[in-house]
Image (cartoon, rainbow, N blue to C red; front, side, top):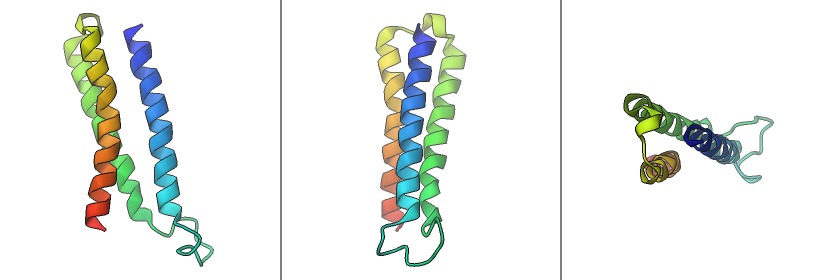
Length: 96
C-alpha cells in the first residue's frame, strides 16, 4: 500500500510538472511569433530539478526499506517532489 501511494503521487506530480514545463517553454502568444514550438527551452530546467527530487526520494526509500517507513514519513515523502517542483520554478524565475 505504501509503495502504491508513493507511485501515484509521483505520477500526479510528474504530470503536473511536465504540463507546467511545457506551458512555460512554449511561451505566451505574444512571445511565440515564430513557428517554433518552444521559444523558451530554459524552462525545461524545472523538469531536471523535479527529477533530482525524485531521485533523492527513491534513494531514501531504497535505503530505509519501504516496510520500515512509517505513515508520517510517507507524508513527508509525498511533499518532496512537490517542493522540488516549486524550487525549480523559483530558481528559473530568479535566473531569468
